[in-house]
Image 1 (cartoon, rainbow, N blue to C red):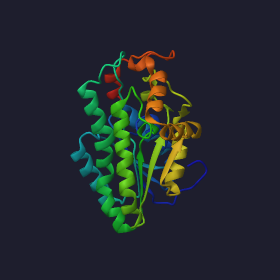
Image 2: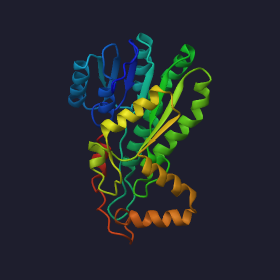
Image 3: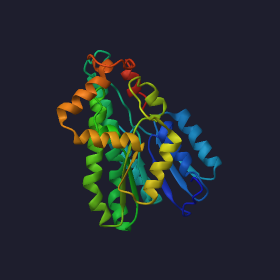
Length: 283
């Protein structure tokens, strides 16, 4: 794990582990003495990640699961924890979609796919572990949100809303867990170079690699940080944006996202039109 050795016997659950950030996190944690429990929807890709992690010495169990099936997911997580206590859970699985090319509303199916995956699925992932972690007086919970949850993106209203909801869930839950020795880290990355983000043709400033993002998130989780957000220049812009009056902020956003939302403004890359395909790219 970037030169750091985890205590032997660690058991780490990562959802959405078949590609992108989830796969990078799995590889990051893979080392001798560590148990990895990896879930995703895509069998072939997940198997490849599991084999790569096993080659690094980790003991790997993988399972094909759709986090939108919250009841099945919750039972699976609870059963796995009962067999071998899970001490780190990373709720990473996610999908995204955008408005239509001229700012048309997202189809309801895309809205539901995002809410059920990004918010309900993340909550269903961690919920079965909270009481057992509190009883043990130890554990790490990581919720992979987004800077879009801090500064909503005009052409991705549902995605932004799901990530804002996940941030609120984590911040509300954190003091409850901290009182019993369990840490909760909310990760708010900016744009990450993954297969999912490649479908987004809008403005992607300061994009970073999945490996760098995984390193930052894992390091924050290991030190029990309340949150981690990156890249720092984009974080600074988000914080500045929250400080200016709403009419000013909205005018700036309209200008930068004009091509995606169908307004007049600066030239920008065309919006992605295959939103449904990206909603089907849950990892």
